[in-house]
Amino acid sequence: MKKPGSTSQEDDKPRGPEKATDEKPGVSNFIRDIIDEDLGNNKNGGRIHTRFPPEPNGYLHIGHAKSMFVNFGIAEDYNGLYNLRFDDTNPVKEDTEYVDSIMEDIRWLGFNWEDRLFYASDYFDQLYEWALKLIKDGKAYVDDLSADQIREYRGTLTEPGRESPYRNRPVEENLDLFQRMKAGEFPDGSRVLRAKIDMAAGNLNMRDPVMYRVLHATHHRTSDKWCIYPMYDWAHGQSDSIEGITHSLCSLEFEDHRPLYDWYLEQLGVFHPQQIEFARLNINYTVMSKRKLRVLVEEGHVDAWDDPRMPTLSGMRRRGYLPQSIRSFLDKVGVAKRESVVDIALLEHCVREDLNIAAPRVMAVLKPLRVVIENYPEGQVEELTAINNPEDESMGVRRIPFSREIYIEHDDFREDPPKKFFRLSPGREVRLKHAYFIKCERVIKDDKTGEVLELRCTYDPQTKSGEAHDGRKVKGTLHWVSCDHAVPAEVRIYNNLFTVESPDDCEDFRQCINPQSLEILSGCQVEPNLKNVKAGERFQFLRHGYFCVDSKDFSSERPVFNRTVSLRDTWAKIEKAEKKGGK
Image (cartoon, rainbow, N blue to C red; front, side, top):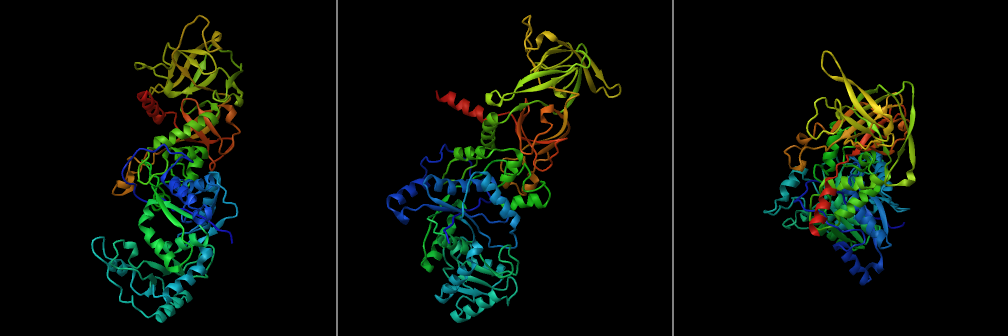
């Protein structure tokens, strides 16, 4: 068997906020310093072997991506190996759906575990044999206390725990009971196997932790072979050892578990990987607890794990994020020992930077208002030329039809315009993107409601170049689509899922869900070049933001576009101001 690798999941509450660091892959950080020293001392024969060990009980989120990038990225940078290992020790919550989604996410981010795919369940037989060894050595025992009683006996941070009345059972009795647990003689929750360590230890994890519980449940890989299952802390370190992992890189919440990780390995006398903890990723206006994300899904607050509002990798992919944007974001965040909260604006900035280069520009009218150009010849259609992306000339140009009747944005017209409103209003002239100057002559309204239904305009045929021959200037440029050629579309505008920066601090995080996190616009009109788009294609809608064709609700006749990110870039303004201030 080849040796595998892994990392821990990010979970609940973030701690104090702090600015992101500027560390980048290959640039020194405390983990790389440790590895450099190990290599200098020829520790592990100069091997570097890491792993990413997700539990298949949900979809990966961007916090897991940081763990993945630390483990896989370091292995790649040091020409080492890395494994993907599923820590599948709880069959009640695990499913092959999660296994498949996790592998898809990892591939999407560009990592290849090659033939080093493993499961903790691969080692169930070995773990059982090692448990028998600890029992024979007097270092593990079968306990009949209930889960509530075990918690009660455990003590507190200020008070030592109490020994279970079953702690000093004879070895032979413990062996017999544990083997009968394995044979399925006892009901769920009736007995557990515990390590015998120290009920007065200052670290609660060392107060005789549970190693196995009775659980009659069908496992997604081992079926009904087992009715006892190892606890995460018991399976994790030994799995690392079996796979020959040199550096077990995990998030900071596992720091208090490291003494237990070490104790098990020392008692068994097996290969001992080094566990190193780093700060997990926390982002404002977001929850990173898989438990809470599952609540959002199961209670219907979002559509599914891949809802574009979710911080899951599948949700970000569906929303239109590029994998390199996530890589860039994690590079900017860096690796630290102290917990921090990163501004979501930094993530959106990284997404914009990449999409600005990768996404072709198109015109889409989200809230259409009909405009009739009265002096334009009826029945005439012109083919106008538009650049696809001024950032990348290799994308070329496209042809856009122009006709007598067009749609503009309803918000681009004001009958009584406020100060500094430079768009269309009665008697005012504006430029149409890639086309002519038009002037509003009349407004058609609903007689009963006063709602503006249509505008009657004229155009200047001498302004096709975008400029007037007589030198007159206009301050407003509007996007538009031809009514006869427009493609109907649905557009979904996504905003932060929560209304507060730290939803984990809410008494009930569900009370902080943003009721305006999704706005569905069903009457949109887009240019005809978008008629045959494919799921996952990305575009910049001029003046609106970046959008992606939805991968689930897809129809070439009436496409659905998800807004990936708006055009506002607060982070870029902050960076610009900081650079200016530093000069």
